[in-house]
Image (cartoon, rainbow, N blue to C red; front, side):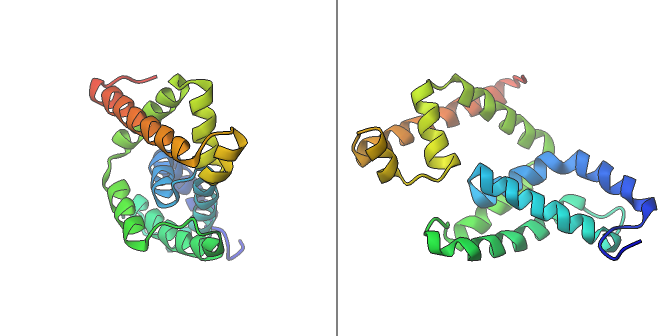
Length: 180
């Protein structure tokens, strides 16, 4: 056994806990990053560290809280590396988002995630491309506006309209209890 892996008897326990709580950890990472690529990178790093330190995890305690704490530390490291890009949220805002994300139940989090995916699929191709570029790929609004030959203010207005529409769509689907 190496020092960077839990003993064999606990590997199954780790796999079961991670499978059960991965959606919630993913949502938490997304709340910290607000960017899908960064959130996936953060989740991967968090899971790697959780795996390496699982021998220190006390069975029966809160696996999600433990994972969220590791994710917070890793997000701080990730943000430090990205500071030069100027795309970071205020630390207070980031911590508040993390608190809200960690307070949601696994079921609510999964329902919101699935609803968001359904709502994004309903967007026009043009709106989906705008959301993907500006939020998924972190293309600056000014740069994206130049690419599509629109004013930055026009793109900001469109993004605001899209965000409001997505929020309303997600809330409606969650309230109705619709699942894919």
